[in-house]
Image (tube, rainbow, N blue to C red; front, side, top):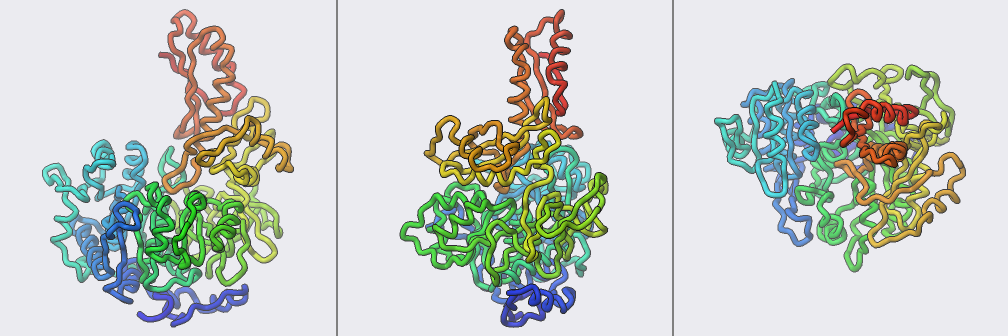
Length: 635
């Protein structure tokens, strides 16, 4: 298929300009259904491959080194192997409603598994860095039929985790082992051996996939309690690829430095699916992607060799690249930096402009919107700090909700409220219907849980996460502005603000920072820095705690629950000082709880039986003023 946008049957050979809202509305006058050239991800990938079957779809770098000899997978081979994978899963009994889960690093087989599974049934990519019990919960909640996993290899414990959880999976029929010989007697098959048996030129199932059929489940919403599995239709995912290619003006033959995990929608859809459906090439930065330190260390050499147009990742990666001088590397191919997954600090966007002379395209969305829902349009001046405008055919509102989470009213211009979204990318609901309570507002508008505002020109500004609010004596404190101030300090590499329990105010703001390598600060320096720059006195953190490393999620976001648990542990430990002063050995550990969210466990050691009840009651008395639940155990 010729044309600028391979997934759009209307555009032709030149992308439209979207310099005004009127341009977008005129573009939308053609119904979206009349534009899209593929109903399923499998069809969309075939369109991308048809442009130049001999071009590379994937170049896999074993060590994220510019001197690596890449393993090259052409489009002809990629589509053939994806078709074989779909046929393999079909032969294993996978139908349209059956689930293929996988635990894989960024090997070529991972991409083939993802899209082969979607062509046969439902794919369920799972974070292999999770603990075994978390993995088991997700696999079982998805009703996993087939599990694809990396075999035993040095430097990874994926297979050990599989062996721990397989007995808990009631629906599991077979495990397919990548880079392993398999053990059929134990229900373990070899990926390569099964693939060799299958034809590569057609789907044996004869399946004709409609856009409304489910393509994948993605886990979201944290790692405690019953897993929240987002159901993506093929329409949701194809729209994501279509929209990203449209706004970024993607063209066949362009390289993208790829290091995002496939269990994250930004990696699997915004980057992988979008690139592969437009005839571009994924330059995969080792099995660990951006988590491989070499990927950051070698960033400019990689840019010089592979000539990408976008430097695209999560904000923590973009910030880390700023610490690496380009030197004499030729990075002239870069046109933009792009990031999402969490807010890009304005200071980072400004530094990218100043040091690299690149505009920063910020995107916003969530798993429930199949990733990107708003974006900074490259045809218009970029407003640093804003996440831009909705993709064509998508909509955003900022609203006030009542106490029951029902729609009260739309917010005025620049009035902060809850961000809700609608459009072809918005999912149809969670797999577990219990999770759909409060998920949608005003019919089909998904509740983001984020706070934001719309300016007079319709640009969306995210002001914080509703559940990240620090509530100090009934006063809502948004951490984002304080974090921005902390991040502006020249010694600060990462910054976060969370609420710590307080017996009087309920919560008080506390800050955490990870300093840049080699940086030092004087005692009280950061507190003074923030105090002098924060107009709202109540928002000034009561203390700023250095931490190294800052806890991050698998996709590079600051993992705030761990910081909240640390803050609570410090407060409760201090509250129990009267007991320790009497020689009582008491330790506090705070962590996740399935129904309470978080819980503090106080362990008493060596307390005589005669005084155990008295000491336990004292613990209850000292911690009673705090909202967080606690329990006492004796050892």
